[in-house]
Length: 635
Ligand SMILES: [Cu+2]
Image (tube, rainbow, N blue to C red; front, top):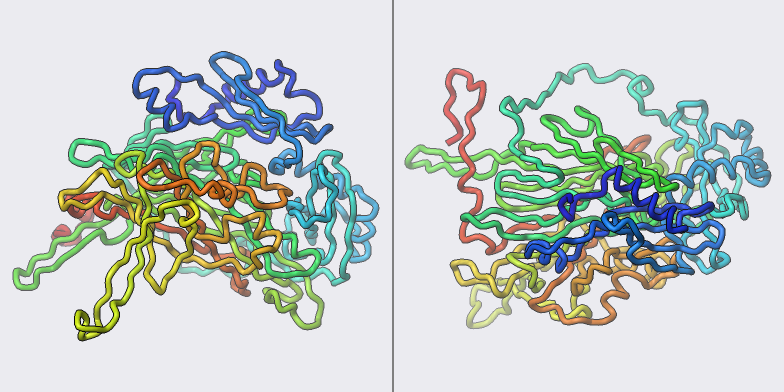
């Protein structure tokens, strides 16, 4: 039996499909939306540690394209049967890869859509790219229909970057169960931009001539060890998991300290994301993609390439997902594991003794990249030698766009190329963290820095101090970043103390962040309630997994974090989930065109009294391999 947190392999996926077929659930017209490991809970894992055997289970979401009904099933692999199932009506699971091509074909053959293309001088429909944007929920669609609001772009020739030629004003509403067009809205006639948006090496003009090879050599190999999906690197130990919806999942992250392994996080993964656009016009207002909950960021993962996506001594992991028929599909090299030099770890020069002591830093990177329509999202978890942990998300690809004629540029965006308009938008990510700081029972404090009032204790008016506030209940644990208070959050284990007597903690340090600009009662704000607060803390419940709820596609709103927190459960010294939302604000630039240089944002988790002193002292001095003229090592 594999470790209970090992992701499902291809043979297991195939077995799940067979069991579902034998049970009558996987029949004609039923689409497999996703299959993933039915993860053991914290309690289950404790039971395993105590010697109990667990069933190996998969979790499957099925959609009956005839009745429109969704069914969830827990499949036991070792018992070869369905252990539990439930039917859900009134929900729309995510749009899956297997629906993209049939829907594109259905649009291509639709007479009303063809007429809209002809009005724009497009006659070769084979050059059209029809992207299935989620329908959203604006109260205008017939309930129960599985819809997409599709947008069209046109390649100038096969192999061309079609995103350079957006069809303005045409929204095609497609029924993804019937696979036919419901309506074609044609809101405004604007000529197709003609400019070239190609970015391949042969399309961009002369390449700069002075870039010499840069190679990373690790002559003795990398410093990590991999066993199945378990990774050990220096003092870190964790497991790599995968789900079609969240992509990379990290489990049971611990750090070795003085002969014991100390838990830090039980689980960490992207829980959802949303990209609200700021243009109110038809053709734009519905652009609100939830790229995890409405598409499956794990389904959208790339196969990574050595020397392009990752450089150096790489260990790859494949990811296995189910296709629309339930058959396994292996994304080879979906996850990249490698080490990177990151400059200086620490240093001090004693000028009187004329001695210098310093260490170089490196980090372990676990990453994957997903392509969702026009955009790319790279997810990079960084493990550091000072026991810090970081998530960096890199955004690249082609901006979502539209076309403008010679008149004034709409105020909700910018011109990026002649005739090509990029609307203002934001990208919000929510990461779900199950903390386990020295054990499962934790508390969270918000720590602000405040200036002391002037007075007898502050005669020079220079005094300032931190002010920690316990986030004692779910209603109080819905917070915003506040750079003017240098705000961070401290995840504390009240029953584990360091040698200075303070409860041990990790600090959640926000990086770049932004509030949403859509009104609180806008459709997207109700549907992505999670984005209205940067930090949420809830009581641990393994059934509460996703920031926008289980089925955000076409959902009217209110699900996910606002619903989870409505119970207002107490949060002190108990099992918690910390949900961090962070947003990138994207006022597009001509420099983002035609393919956007990667933009990074993220956050860090840093030990805060978790150790008794710097955990980075035992990193050995590095000696330059090719020390010219016998240069001294860095110490
Ligand atoms: Cu953007």
